[in-house]
Length: 331
Image 1 (cartoon, rainbow, N blue to C red):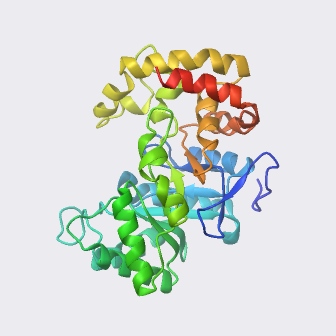
Image 2 (tube, rainbow, N blue to C red):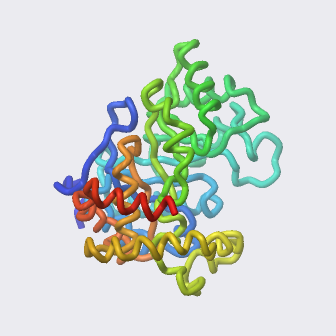
C-alpha cells in the first residue's frame, strides 16, 4: 500500500481551467456508491486502486448519503495515510443535511455556507478542501451574496478554489463578473454532466466561457449512470444502482430504447479497439480539451481497474475512430 502518489506515465494531469492546479484526467467520485453500495473496506480498496493508477483527485458532496459519504472518504484517507499535499479533494454544498431548517436547506446564503463547510471538513477529517462547489444555483439568494461568502471561505483558508455545479452559463458569468468587479476570488470550475448522450451544455452552452473566463470542468456521469457500459441492454440488473430504493427514476432513463440503440452501435467500435464500452465512453470524454477531469465511480475494485484501463484506449481514438463514433451518436 503506497502512501505517496507515484504519477502513472499513462495518466495525463490537466490544469483546472486557467488555474495552476493540475488534476488527473480520470478521477474518482463517491456519488450513489459510498454508503449505499460501498462501506469502508470496499471504499478503501477502490480508492487505493484509483490512487495506484495515478488518480490524484477525489470528489464528494455534503448531500451524498446525508454526509456519510464524506465520513467514509475521510476515514479511508486517514487509514491509508495519504500525504495531504499529494491529493486534491472536493466537496459540494447546497442541499443541506439537517432537514427543513430555515436557512440550512437548498440554499447558498452566507449563514448556510459558513456552517456547512465546517461539517464537511469535520467529516472529511481535513483542515481545508481544495475545491468547493455550489451544488446547484440558488434563485432565492442574490448571486452577489454567494460570491462574497465563497470568496471569504477562500480567504479563511477553508477552501482553495471554488466553483459551481449545474449552473447555467449566464449564472456562471454573472458570478465571475461580480467577483471581477469587487476583486474577489472568482469561480474557477464547473461540474456538469457530460457523456456521449448528454453533450449540449458542455459543448455548446459553455463554449464562450472557456476562453472568456478560463472555466475548467470536472464532469460527472461520463457513463450516463452505467447506460454506456452496455449492462442495461437486457434490462436492469438486480445489483445495479438503478435497482436501489429511491432510484426508480433512474431505471426508466436507463431503459430508453433510443439510447440503448446508440450503445448497440458503439459496441462494434469498442470491439475493434479491444476495449469495453465503458472504457470507450470514458476515453471519448477525455478527447474534449475543455474537460479538465472525468469523474469515475465504482461499486467494486474490479470496476476501478476497468475504468482506469481507459488510459490505454485514449491514444487509440484517432480522428477516424472519432468520426465513426460521431456517426453513431448522430443517428
